[in-house]
Image 1 (tube, rainbow, N blue to C red):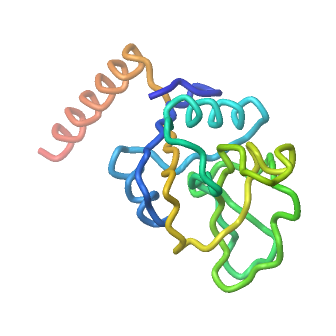
Image 2: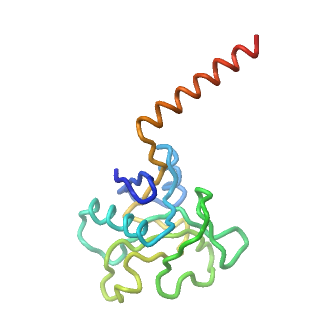
Image 3: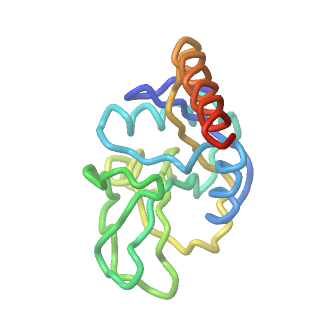
Length: 168
């Protein structure tokens, strides 16, 4: 795990998956596929994956992000964690016109042989949600300090006691 920008805990999951499988994998751990809101956060995601993925380079090194095209809208995107879509880092010629089911966002996390690195490395593209990405995905969830977690548990216990008393 890695503490990322804006007090979020990001985890790289090195497991081949289609987008829905990646989404479910994050959800099973109380997280969502990663959203990105700044250059610093984009760099953090890149460094997390770069440091964890030790496989040799291949032609396609992309990972799933938590962005998708809004239903029925050609050029409008959203993050599945409901945070604002207020930052973009599209690769060259992205997002292109929608063809078939190209609705889900991925992230170029490695140099791609023969491509202009500045146009692709650390940038995003839109691909089919059903495409198998062999390099996994990044999950993100709010980072909660132990003190905050303890305070939240205390508040929840009080509420439960109050609710039980009110029902009698």
